[in-house]
Image (cartoon, rainbow, N blue to C red; front, side, top):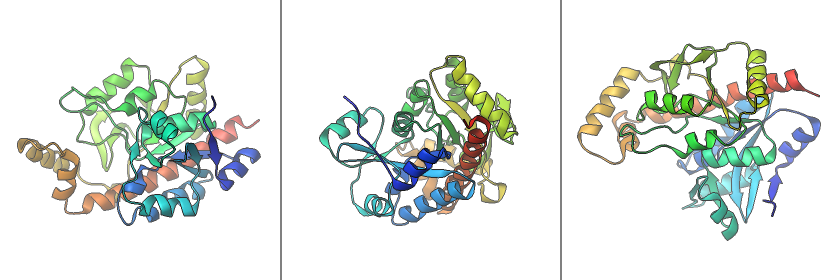
Length: 290
């Protein structure tokens, strides 16, 4: 059977015209009353940098490749829209219900739709107890999509996350930075395996990865702007304090401890990452346009 794909009008026109398209997860639409505006700002950042956004959603047994304005409002305002991961995707499609996508499920949808780039503010990783691995990491080994992100959250074990990616042959390249970023922290304190500043070189590296027969993703990291960042030492101090309490909800506790600054920083990461993804997708299209 074929999975039904419904392309938004703007996305369909872009594909027909050979314009670059960047996929965006719709999970942000579950983040609160301002989530629709946040999604719009991320889409606008992609457009401003020369590409077309395609926010991914699940509805009525179909994968929506590019949510309409009506869809964005509906997803943001409907209570209880579930977050659909890669393991949930076949069940939600079969039931014909609505769902907002994670990075992992968006990767699957993007590849099915023929999209080569996905913007993800932060990827999942190996948890600090080393007992759990995010589905994002596993999906990176399966889906041929270039993922542009601001690294992973400081609440994870970023060293083990990089080791996992290395073990599974997923390239990690820092764009215009030496270090692997940590979401709204400019640096995790860990060096990235490679640094590439030239978008044309990055485009060729991405295509070389797949031409070599590699089955998975190509990870490009870009740090948030220093003016929008939160100090990494401050975040680490908060995490250490929260872990001492034994809470199961580490990221929520960190958000509370930053007294709302993390929400503002998160929006900045979403917009900056989307802008860079749009630039890189446009450079890739220029380099490999038929």
